[in-house]
Image (cartoon, rainbow over the protein chains, first blue to last red):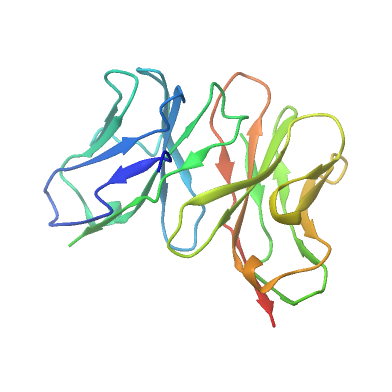
Length: 114
Length: 115
């Protein structure tokens, strides 16, 4: 399968712990996006990368959140000192060149903070 | 700021009947508009987009959408609904001005096609 993959699919953690999620985009896509989706809501934009450069960040991305794409391929999203309000589905998507092109979404990582 | 509204949380339609899922948007410039579908336990899938040109856009699985600038709408339509169309549908918008890549999604409309 050459689609977008995310790991892990599910993560349960205790409040205050750090978590890290990984996203592997489609190989020829230079744009990578992170979204957060809560129940009953659509995906909310968090940040995006063009190759290894992080070019936009949402105000939703507090200083506890950090994302990297060190070699312009896979990306990681880390949440430090998790809070119960961080419980959500974290989605990764990739596209070729520009977000006006189709974004291909991964299956998501469901985070539960106890 | 850009925003999108999907006024219906759920739409029920009988199999074989035409369906419409509504979407309105707000942007400061011209819009890029998208529809995505989410099936249970699966990632979002792209259906269609409007960038420029013909106001009627045709997409995957027989879906189409009509861009109406005066009404700031981009309703999703299909002439004959299938039970397999039952899913969660998201409208999304991006402002074409400013060079930003952020795409804003609506809250979604659950489509239930009744056999």
